[in-house]
Image (tube, rainbow, N blue to C red):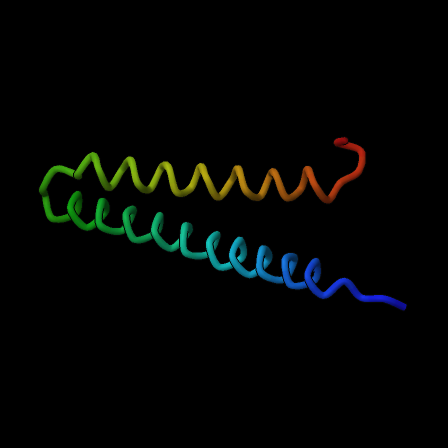
Length: 77
């Protein structure tokens, strides 16, 4: 039996980067959403940057999850 260590390392690295990256992206969205909610609760207008960052982060997370499902479910190919 032969193990292609380079391919295994590439898969492990990609899994680690995408797994951690997705969590960081979601945390960024939660942080921006929280800043927006805090500003709104204190009576100040919400920053459009926080709204845009939260929206982009959550949309990217949804896209990543849907792409993962596309890769996993063979009927979609």
